[in-house]
Image (cartoon, rainbow, N blue to C red; front, side, top):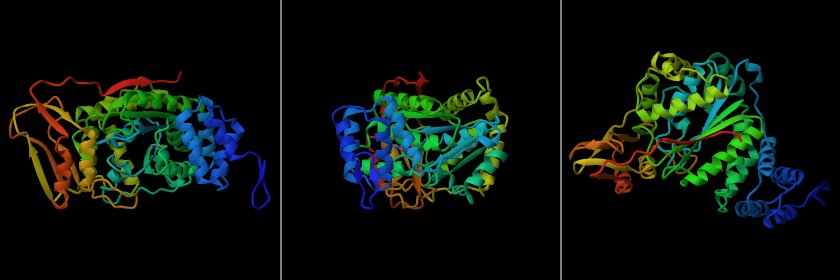
Length: 436
Ligand code: URA
């Protein structure tokens, strides 16, 4: 026991909790809950929490510790509930990738089946784009909704994509910033509890995780991505949220558009029954997972894309948040086309390189407070496996002017290849993880 400055007695000592984890032991539930709570109250210092995070990175946590840690982070803030809606809720979380616009067609597609989708999203940072940045390309659309507005929209339209308020899992916000500067971001128990605390606090009944691996992913290595997916599926299940995960390839950008406005355009193509095959495949696969968890395993997802039901839900979702679904989207004033230097097959388009290039063009931000350029980005005209002839356009970079082109082209050099042999095609969805 130790006493705080104002005389209140603390039931644990941070040093004991740190030592327990440092020496490879389990932290008892009450001590772990206290550690998170005391950190949120500023009783446990950043230096102590950093030491604890490093001990977790080195020695791991068992399934029960991860559940308790997540629950303690949820308890640090508000917990939403959509129990009064009268319909099931299902959400999706992606660990982030290049050209990953799947949330845009997915939310209205699932809503078209009467399942409510409360999608709290973020803005992009670094080479992966943010869903809110993409949607803000639509004139009038607003990301900030009150809880009451969100509930009303879920009732009337069925799908909401909006900004996560700062009230969800505030302990995670602090811990994540600390991990960022102490080399402890990579600890799977900490990543899993960070992501899942926010998703569980959001109050969804069911959750599908799109865990990406490959060059453009946060988790490059497949085995680690699988371990993260398993940990998060267990965590969701243990916390009463029906959870499954798909492990999906992020070595190549998704679809043909990388940016903001161009990704909205591509999403609308998918909602109109067209769009690139990989974007359609992943949208359909994730929609099937969400609908199965919500009690509709036999839903004909493709039919809702073909017959306009998903598009109707999209239009209503955009209009409900002040957007005009018919307004022209911003287009780049300046473009530059890169062409194939010779005949052959496109053998590689590296997601990380294309993601960094789009970011350098202004589609993403370097600091959380920076604005993004909605018209900036890259349009691909060929993907790995396509046969091209010398002089044929491979991709177009664009922006409001050409001032950022040289730096974008610099990183794109070496990010793609043309070879003589047709490359092997790896499956987009590599594995499905369900609760054990
Ligand atoms: N995203 C999060 O929200 N938390 C992490 O720890 C990593 C990615």
